[in-house]
Length: 173
Image (tube, rainbow, N blue to C red; front, side, top):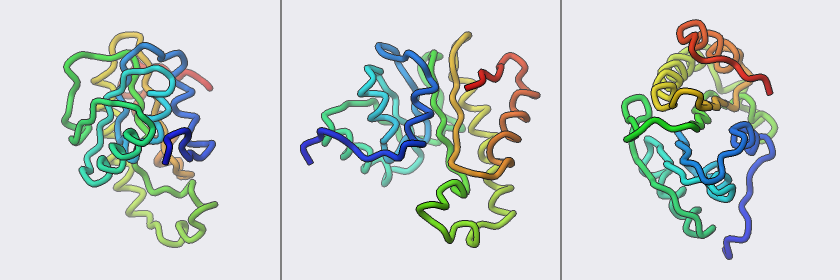
């Protein structure tokens, strides 16, 4: 309650770390709620645009930022149609998915997810990746992450995106 720290799974910290040196820069955090990565970006010295489609989840983000004494420009919009005022060097897309990688905390998830859900998720991820790519300045960094174990929601999405947009290159971790 004093805002001295926040809880974040170790794996959830990696996407922000993959952005590299972003201190003093503006970063677009897509699908940002409930705000763990926005907090991590703010803590690292970034000016953050936090965008999410869910007004309810953005209320949680706002409360978390208030508690931590961080600020962000908060935008309630669909990332597939929203565009920033200017292209940015850093865009983080920690995208919604079927969440199969959260099996440790949700052991029943593999029994609740269907192939149809994975297909729908893959379609959404393609749309989000294309939209995110339209927010990046030349030479910028787009980090795409999901918490899915399904290749249809990870490596296959990246491969498909790169085949359509050869101006982007994979930067190995």
